[in-house]
Amino acid sequence: MAWMEECMMRLISPYTNQGIWLRGSLHIHSKFSACGFHSLPEIALAYRDYDFLAITDHDRVTDRESAFPDKILFRGYEASGARHMLLIEPPFGDELPANSFSCAHYNNMAAEAAACGGFSIINHPTRISGQAWSFEEILQMPSVHAMEIYSGDGIHIEEDVAVRLWDKVLSAKRQIWGIGNDDFHHWGQERRVWNVVQAEERTPTAVLRALRNGNFYVSTGYGFDAIEVDGADILFRLKSGSSLFTEAYKYFTLFGRDGKVLAEKTGYFQEFHYQASGDEGYIRAEVYLSGGYCGISQPIFVA
Image (cartoon, rainbow, N blue to C red; front, side):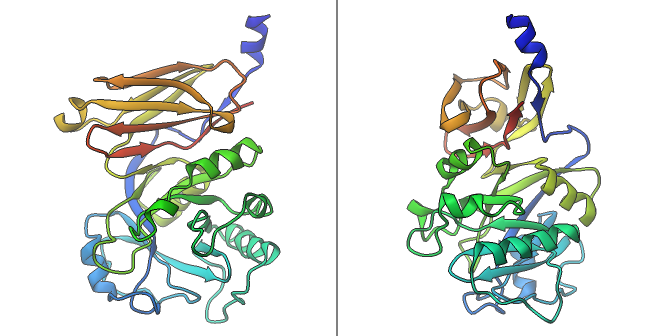
């Protein structure tokens, strides 16, 4: 019977383990937002070694400039009604949509962006001091690709980690990716959290495809070299490339349905192996280095 259950179980992973890893941030405000302070050349300096960026000013699409000659620069738009949502490569030009919030209106914008090859993100969903999204509202947004699970603005620290809400949404069988962004407005908010995408090549189309497919992880400085699935077995290969990584003490946790802890390991190691039982719902990983840097994977779904 156990053999039959294992044969029937299927793990659906977003990770292809093919292509190149690229670093980027998708929630950045310039001086063209009332809340922003810096010019595009200043932003280019702040993120000088990133591979891709999106300028996401409030309720406008800021024109791209030549300040980013060596970067993939996406057009961005932050809808700023009672809830906030990002559109990366929005499907409109000079004629902008109303920013008034309703789930139906926002979901339609996300669907239109997706139809044009874009990407959409629910912003800082647990910011209870303003713009918080409810669990029920997120479930009414089937066209949205991702939700911010880590916002690095540093002002609303106690409100800007949303992994528990993410687990609740995933447990309702809503496939949604977790993303991390700085929500940059001024110096001191840059380079706090980013997304490491595995794209087929260093092009806008390939990066957007990888984002939509969930082929990325969230990082504050640590992460993964590969996440491999073979039948019921999952192998997490932790980030190497520096003795500061390979020799560091680590804290590794796997989470499943309802945020249940599936497995934990602490110590000095570079790989973690897990064999799925079939009742996890989904499997996602968080790994922390002693000292604080972390990497958060996307969920692997159990079908």
